[in-house]
Image (cartoon, rainbow, N blue to C red; front, side):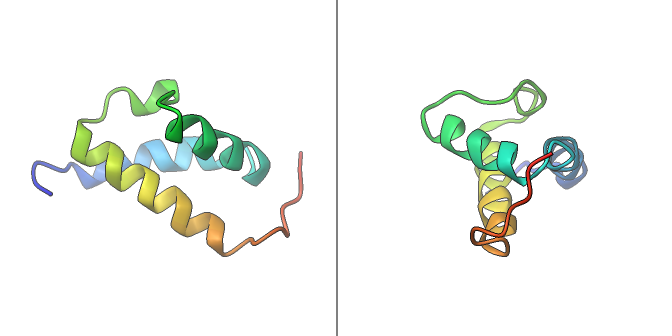
Length: 69
């Protein structure tokens, strides 16, 4: 991967994670179908790959223990 702005990726992740883990799981499914959240549209393809990898990594920690808002 090259040309990755880590700060942009982290900012997009923070925004998405504020919506709660239930919504993050929904977003992961949507992303896998090609529907990116608005705040990720600013990311280039490498940054989007990293964004999705990071979301998936964060959600592994929850493994069904999600609380919805």
